[in-house]
Image 1 (tube, one colour):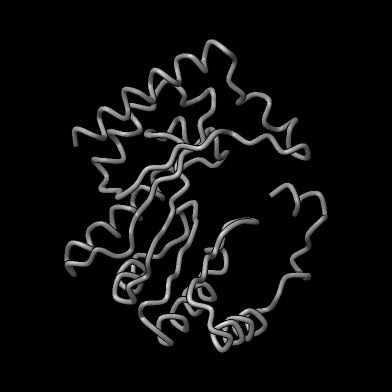
Image 2 (tube, one colour):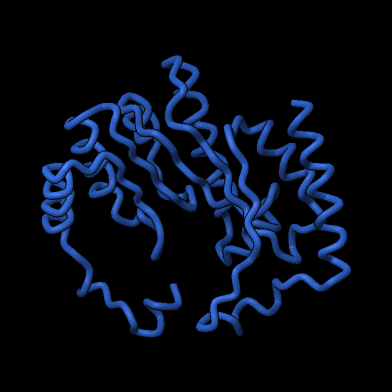
Length: 208
């Protein structure tokens, strides 16, 4: 991330696993019932810690809410069954297109699309196998000039993949990373096409 590259946040300054788990235990003792693991980078880089946090929360009470936002590439195959059996509530997969060319370009990582797609498929398969409605699988897509004209295709892809929800987000231009984002910004003409595509996507979703 920009913050890590610029030296604003250093790996050695992060909380240790023990410190994070102590914090979770403290929050549980204070009555916290919802735990959202998101923001600031990819949470599954610390996969074992994330899974242990969810296990502790669900051990305290299966009805407590746990949620992850992830790029979807770092789950291991066995994680799907673990999280389904734990009744983990929701996973938000950040997928910025319905094809590898678009998504991998935006993410800057070759193969990212297929890795995320494969993990979504594994979750869908295990949910069906165990007859579970959890976790809810949501696809998050940031609209840019690489995918603004493919929104109806993105909706179709989300339906075919078995996502429960699809969220389309405007590209937010933070001052610190603005120079890195200029090549993805929409112009006025592209914005017009985007709104037409959103209408088409809505009709597709409503007819599913």
